[in-house]
Image (cartoon, rainbow, N blue to C red; front, top):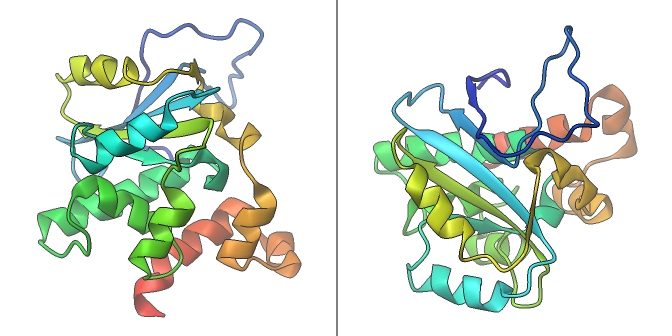
Length: 204
């Protein structure tokens, strides 16, 4: 899965203090929407919120199937690409009838985990009642923008650019969970190590 997948940015405000480089163009917007490379009729949108006051309500709504999205603890995320890898894998498993959980969105949460323990995956990557931040992940078609607005309206919190997820990351917990060694970080990035663990857990 390539990191330079087609991107669709919303009309959310661009932060004026961020400059675009000709060598590395990047638009900072509140939502981050990308077309799945292997499934071009599917798009995945990530929305990041902090100062969330209704995490318990959101979690209960997700359990009851009232929210069509994955609610992820952003403290366990290194980069939005981590979510794209999990989503791409989950859609593939859904298409082939090989999901290990009951829904696409629960499969995305499970796919983020480095182990095959489903309950542990939900504890680590799902949101808890006392959490004050949440990453909302949606899989949709091109013409379902209203779905994004409807779900965003359910979150009582401040939406921030998805690219800011690294500011919320708990690096110590991430390194411990994925068992990343200092030597490994010298050879590559933390994101590389995390994605590697996610990709190889089925063959370990």
